[in-house]
Image (tube, rainbow over all chains, first blue to last red; front, top):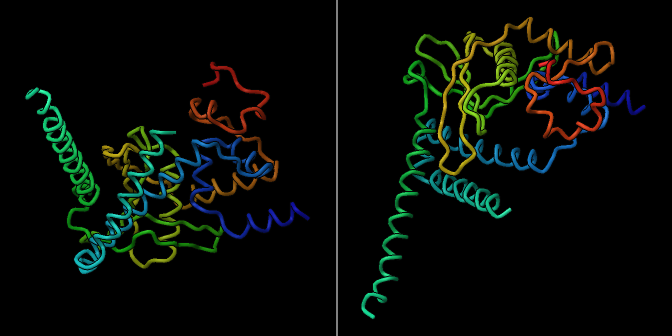
Length: 95
Length: 186
């Protein structure tokens, strides 16, 4: 039953991230499928860091496509993203 | 005594100049990200940012693109952002961009370039940037890889060892890899 559920979910759609993992380690792909994802603390931190960088990157792209957003509230979002990145950096330094 | 009273002033000046320098470097770093485009994309228009694309046939694939630029010739070029210490693209980046290309091709009438760019940013606060042009896999190659993944998950194919041996020490499943290969296998 559980296997059928997993198979149904898998057949629904393969994400680019899932497929990209094949380029790192195929054994890891199998283990994660069998036992579930078990990210280490460093990996979780890397994911959070990546999300923060992507958020900033997205906001910069938004500013580039919509200059009005930059002149009004876009700067505030950029400041917020920068502060979050600074906090993440300080936390990493302390941890 | 007079000399001692100058110490806080000196420290304040030093602190201010340090903060000013850090802010300047940070601003420069942000500007580099904003304008970090290859020559090819200098005049290109940013048409998609953090957008999800997907196809259903022949295999259902979904991909979230970081950025898609449209060049003057009407071609779409994909850019993928990565945050890491090593400033070079990996095979996984190429695969990710290739899946994105297939997904975007299925949803767009415009042609998608057979190459893409991997933008690497160091995780350090004032991280440096690297921009790398990579040749992408074709559609059939992506579908073959998806089929191989399916075969591995079904137990029909034996999975390969990692390309990079440095991945093993940090892998959370290393205790399950009983028949770990010797160093000679790489």
